[in-house]
Length: 415
Image: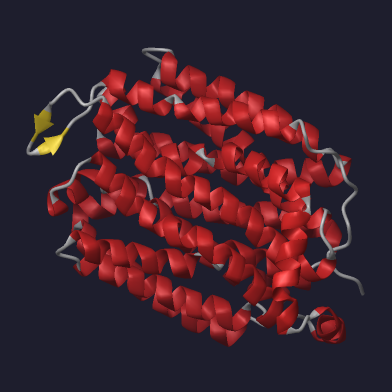
């Protein structure tokens, strides 16, 4: 029973990640459909994050209060509605509304997965289960790159989004019928840790007053930012421009980042669970990320095999970002673990919301006036300037990580 519940929570994370990255393979179609530039496309994709980020705080509070079952079911339905609105949009603002609905529904995905892991499994399995759940989410991102591009070529971007909406409705029903908030033996404990409504802001205040909450969240933000900024949106266009390969092959290349995440998340989580060295692992990952992204952006004429390998390695070391969530749980009391997780996720997604339009703005700023089929095209030099944000972000993550201290993990729940 518990594995079925965890599996559904993980599959919803798969689904929300698929929705999250999907615009990255639709850039030419979206530019043409709405007659907009790169800044607008960055904003359109970013609408998902604009609502996802502020939703994290109420999501954490609501999950602590009411559990995951009904919330995840409603979330899947709302995300599916967003995909439907996106698919039928004739105007930019309708598409933006669809992305907002997707962001609202998807905002429950990761916190819901953390809730299921912490309420159905003992603490020693936390790192590996969060890592595996994240891996499943990243597989959703992989499917949202090259494979989604093939589906769009075959059926069109509007038809594919309708199918995604129907999948959301089906998933909502399955979650509602299957998922339970906690095992029977934990019911009495769950009653004890639930807090009255008037404690909501006190819990949030407790998280915000902890200085390490902020340092950890900012370090996490910069460690993650290459995933939404590069892998989820602008990486395909970058590869297509620099190497002149097809959009489909570029999508498969960039999807190696998500495949790397799928392996790196559970492996690094297992290493952390065994040696309890989160700070060292995070610092090493940040430095490695800066080095690898520097090679990708600045070293010319890389063989495709080398490029694929570098993308995989960037994803693998980015999987260390899950340790920031584990760290957040470790430094806060039991009854606010959902709020603490949501606070970290809020900061991370806020960064994602800013980076996508920022890259678009930098591209437009360095646009040389070239057009193709009525759509702006950007030079390799413009892409390199814009993509310089990513190695810089990894370096900033390293700096903030240095201010963290190793803290022994606290129990996620007590028997």
